[in-house]
Image 1 (cartoon, helix red, strand yellow):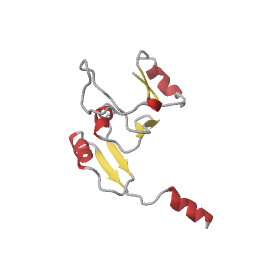
Image 2: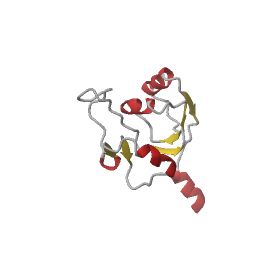
Image 3: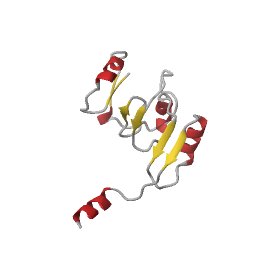
Image 4: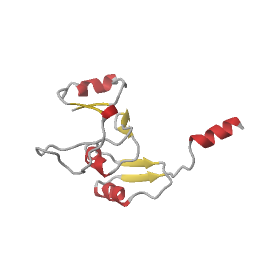
Length: 124
């Protein structure tokens, strides 16, 4: 399966993986998550939905928006060992259970604010 995430290029390291299964393409730029969540779709084929803004940063290092239950099957395929969460809100129980059941460590820094504070400090 090949995952297309818009107009991004493919790194030379990833090109060898792209050649394996070019018959199925998912264009994430126009993709909307399914309304019914579950481990399989019609025909018994697994449904893998990456979290919003998902991308590989380096070999074995990924980044994404906050994952939801619909993303858990996809995340399991990555063999993730740890998660860095920057949101200050309490981590959702469903996500905690997913991490525990898959032996994934959570590092939550809980950074407040965002771009607005940075812009204000630069201006004045």
